Structure formats: C-alpha cells, structure tokens
Amino acid sequence: MSAQEVEIRISPRIADIGQAEWDACACPEVKPGVRPNDPFTTYRFLSALEQSGSVGPGTGWQPQYLSAAIGGQIIAVAPMYAKSHSQGEYIFDHSWAHALERAGGRYYPKLQIAVPHTPATGRRFLVRPGFEGSGMAALVQGAVQLTGNNGLSSLHITFCTQAEAQAGEDLGLLVRKSQQFHWRNNGFEEFDGFLSTLSSRKRKNIRKEREQAQRFGGEIEVLSGDAIQPAHWDAFWQFYQDTGARKWGTPYLTRQFFDIAQQTLRDDIVLVLAKRDGAWVAGALNFIGAQALYGRYWGCTEHHPFLHFELCYYQAIDIAIAWKLAAVEAGAQGEHKLARGYLPRPTWSLHWIREEGFMRAVADYLSQERAAVDQEIDILTEYGPFKRAEIEEQQ
Image (cartoon, rainbow, N blue to C red; front, side):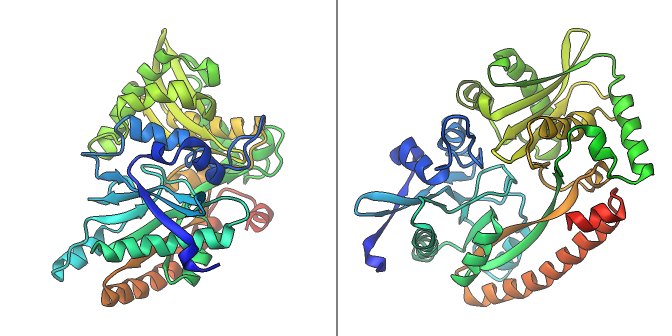
C-alpha cells in the first residue's frame, strides 16, 4: 500500500468524524453484553470532555482529532490535542520544556496524542480491524509531519500500550518507560482469597484498616448505571473540587462533565460513596472496562481514618472480584498503594522532537531513565506485601 493512498485529516470536533466511524476504530469489540476494552477512548467519553468544556478553548487542550482514510473510509483515528502547557498529562516533561526554552527554543505549543486528564493505559492509535499495521503507520507519519510542518516543538503519545511503544520505536519515535501501581486478580472468589496471598503482617494491617474505616459512623454504597442519580453527582462534585483544588490548583473537569456523564456514561461508571447522618461525606469514581476497573477520582468533606483506602482501593478490589475483572488500575503515583496489594507495573509513552540535537539529548536521558525505572520496579516489588511465591508468580 503506498503512502499516497492514505489521506490524513484533522478535525477540530469529534462530531466531524462521527460516533459510528470513531467507535469502529476505538472499540470494535463492543456488542450486546460486551463492554469496550478501554472506556476512555470511546466516542462518548471524548465527546463528553469536549461538550463540557473540559477540553477546548481556554483549557490548553485544543482538540485536533487525527484520522486516516482510504478511499473515503476511515481506517484509523487518534485523540490528538494541541497543548499550551503540560498539565493533566501525568507523564512529566516540564524539565524538557525548561531545557529547550533556556537554549532559546520554544516548547509550547506541542501535539499530544492522549486521553486528557486520564493516566490509564490503552491504545492511542485506534485502528479498524484489518488495518493494524498500515493504520498506525499512517497516523504516526501524519502526526510527525504535522508537528514538523507547523513548527511545533514535539509530539507526545502518552499511556500507550507496550505493543504500540515497540511499533512506535520501529517508526523512529523515542520510548519512555514509567510505572504505576495496579492490582491483579488471580482468580479470587472473595477478598479473603486475596488476603491469603499476603504476608501475615500485611494481611493483619489491611484487616485493621478496613475495620477502622467501616466504623466511620455511616454506610458505604456502590452505585452503577441507573442506580446513579443526579444528586450523587452534586455530592461528588464537592469532593472532586476539594481534591482538585489541593492537587492541581484548579479541577480539570467542569461541572457539566458530570451532568453529561449522568446522561451518557453512567453505565461505564462505578461510584463508591460514603454516607453519614443522611449526608454524603466521601466518594470515589471508577470507570469500568472489559478487563479492568480504573480508579479515577476521590474526595471527601469529612476526614475519617482509612476511609480513603477503603473507598479507593479495598472496595475497588471487592468490585473487581465480584465482577471477575482482571485488574484494578489505581491511577498515577502513590507508593502507599504498595502495602495495599497494588504492585508496580510499567507504563509507556512515545515522543518525537523536531530539533534533532535536542531529540538526541532526550534519547540519552530516556535510556538512563528506563534503567532507573526497571530498578525501581524491582525494588518496590521486592518490598511488596505478597508472600515470596506470590511475588514470583506475579512477576
């Protein structure tokens, strides 16, 4: 297939591509009773970000949806954005920006292929079945060409799959390796089955934490689908604002996002809420994929010992076991997750920098960083809560 046969397009609105075409590439596995593997690259999720003003003018995330077509048929798409900052990405390149600007260059704007505000691994080059190789190659080549032709500093693809990282390296992109903490379901039938894989001391600590958390003076509710009501979002918005203000200065998602979530995303969501004296006092928001539960946001209006761990980590494990999900991805950072049964796992990103000398410097840095990440994963796994045989099996 020659390059001339593939047409690359940029669309400022995902609606210009359309739901049927987008989802045919993003989640072709979906059918009645089957969820998308990745809830974050679906048309409905990305459209909710756009419609709610969580991306777009004034946010530093300007949609530039990338698509590749042959003979008028779209064969591949990618969620791409022009970025005027590096916030909401969770793969940190601030030092790169400072280095280039100190050398007299300009780092922003840049192009980012990512799900905004979402540190969850998934396909970033969304290819219609049957076009796997040519579709990804067309998107990569198109994105690199757009970066160069428009005088932008760089292109970044964050939280891609390992297979995409390997293919991207073959296409001339730089590979970056990072790590997160994930929980793995080894066919557990109940929470105690998971606990039995831990060392005695860690097992006792978790039981103690759960007992203390559940004595907060109220009850915990797990809600999904039609059980989620608008009033639940009113409460969760307060939690989200509190956490967002402390972590990022300004929450990334607008209030309207949660209104749209109630309309179009509630079947993809699990809310874990704590109520005391008739009022919601804390909550955790999770998204559901075909194989994993993704912990995204947490907040509270009252502090109770270990309630954070209960709602975010232990309830997520309960849900994954009950729903027979293979994993819980608990978001970015947080070594405190290690003692709760979440082991370090590698994550991947790809990068291309227009200035050749700076790209060589970044390549050298990434080579050293990958070795450091490998060492960190080994050390953290060694100090994890699992019995020795369980650690070896999970590795």
